Image: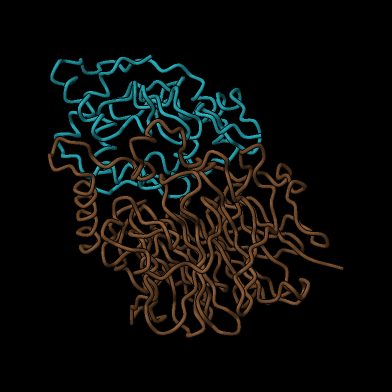
Length: 407
Length: 190
């Protein structure tokens, strides 16, 4: 399946979206203003002179000797080393049963396999030309890749890294939209494949099919919504004990420097919760346009506000034995960092401690990717290795760091 | 360490080498001109493009995100450093007007200005359509090439980095596209 699949439903939804945005902007004439570029959509008139724009993606990864490891600050007892580099736009990570580390990318369109070659890691490109293949998950010898509106399966991949062949298409009828079209992919405790379907824009009325977290069986059947009213979640994990789903979410842009917060959410019980988008942000701010006629009390609030424009992406529950005991079952979150804020926030790794009957507690863990308000790297995803060390991918410098602990 | 201001800069692994870029560009000159000012209809000029943009296009050809029967083999064996050097070289070349470019008449100007305003072209391509960072320069570009690219985005048969141009092209009619290509191609180049 190398040709793009033109999904009729996806097309219809896209046309509906464009029409919706135009109508939403109060414009009905064919000659009036068209939708602005995605990153400017929702920008109010008072902010139209703003110089804020998304951080451009470097075309090449940073060479190993140029990566300023010493700038990354971690708590006492922890060490940061460069685990791999030269991985352009390195994003999510998943480990094969034979020890191959698979790494996804976003705009570059590659999927990588890292193979241990006696101390160093060889970076292979096992797939290229894919459409934002951000999600990777491994099960029963197969690598699953979520690429925009499709999930692909490379069977027996670890035995044919140099010749992966064509993947099987698990599903290809997911909505197609570039804004927030990138997906995180993970197998849940129930053996189903979970992924996000983001809102197809910054602040838009999403079609029924968008702004949610969904799941399917590994064979592509049994599509179900898990959480709705989610603007864009690109990272989630399950609590090691309760097996309940927790996910990060990105709040809208162009509402202000300090609002809304990006958020952490928890899904419990059997009902499908609605977390408010596009009507209500961060649990307590009604959207100036879509919130009219609504109250935030109609929706499920987030578990925690993580800070405005920090861009939380990958998250895991730490379950290893290497880190000190207080880190057991603590959430680690990679914050890719701001573009829609003058003073940038994020660009680091933060933790959230959950305790029964108490509000969650957030604490910084690793920082230093931002210097003088400019990034040299952007943490994206996390992965816990079998030895309990923590890998952090950096999709800007194209590297993976390993954080370890010793007394 | 990294300049994020709106200037054409190459964020390569090492300082990109314009001189190296020049010598590496010899295989490119046959189509794109020795200094990146192409004269063949349908072949794009590269002179004066932001280095990030040129680097990304070469990368997309190598990664098969963008396909062209002539460019794909040219890009296959380029290293990241080659691409950075080539991009830096072309960014440093002055852009010259294309021969035989269309003349701007009143109708073209009026329609072109209206279309570029309503479709927000300057939001990404800059106030003078000179490009910035990973966004290409439009001024001084070949009319047939602009037509081909816009049609490709409209019909979703070509890829762009984040889908921005694919989205921007959807509300354009084929007539709009012809008018836009003519208008942009007839703009006076710096």
